[in-house]
Image (cartoon, rainbow, N blue to C red; front, side, top):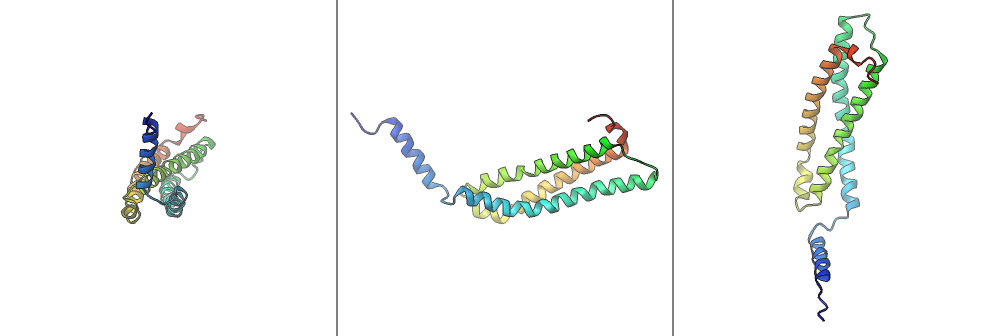
Length: 143
């Protein structure tokens, strides 16, 4: 009987593929991603908050007696949580690419992903904020 069964050759192939890849532990890759992305989350949230505050004050200046319903504030909080969930998508891309052979190149160019994500978030925030502040009564009773 041959000792090199198909099962043994598959596990040997898997081992060689794992050895051919990066020798950097996953823990270090994830830690590197956190160190890179978390400080930028502050910038991301500040830019999006500035857009929402701009629309709020623009509407508030037009109508001085304007009081937003409580459901509206809940909608803003939910939108902020959704924006931060979208921000977390960067981790998926970052960790995936760091596990590849392109890790060193990626680490010097991942700022492009941040800029692209920020531009998309700014466009979406601008559109949503314009809609929310043009008719905030639409949010009454949705929660």
